[in-house]
Image 1: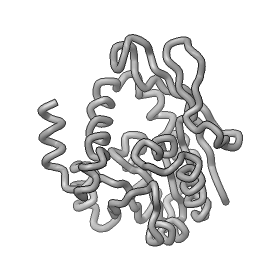
Image 2 (image 1 turned 90 degrees about the vertical axis):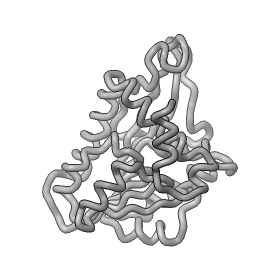
Image 3 (image 1 turned 120 degrees about the vertical axis):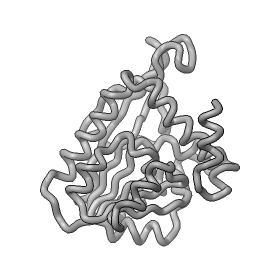
Image 4 (image 1 turned 30 degrees about the horizontal axis):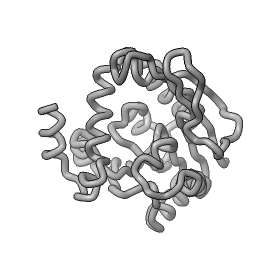
Length: 224
């Protein structure tokens, strides 16, 4: 708890990200990822593999936009830097370690701090001019920090991705506790058949309660 508080104080970010709990949530993800490393490994590797298979390994003079980049836990940044000439990371808050990497990247990593629940015209233009856009583990989380209804947020995010020539969407779509029933995370907003799916043990028993919490993850390639 003390480490999380120090990180909350030290992280440069817009004040709004502190007051609406976005910074606290992002710091919490970092520490949960450490505690649940063994349980998360399969999910994170599946995300990295799906992205790598989708964008290909051949280096090109192309640019990439990552929406909801966070700590980049679910990305192989070194692979992406070999693949793309420029990468723009977009999130409400950029962790200190990501800010340091960007400052040392000689301009190849660009950071934009903005609320993705309501993308600005600048973000829409950026995505439309990108070679690829990727949204990973963000889609189902959009309603958590917004007062707007879920369908509006989901429609807006999908519309943003469709502006990109090529896009990848990875999202958890349902959750269950123990052996209980699956509960939709994007109810009344069905997505097309996924190109890949897998299970993510987001909380082993004892992490947030006595039961294991699992997520069903779907991955898509959109547009071109």
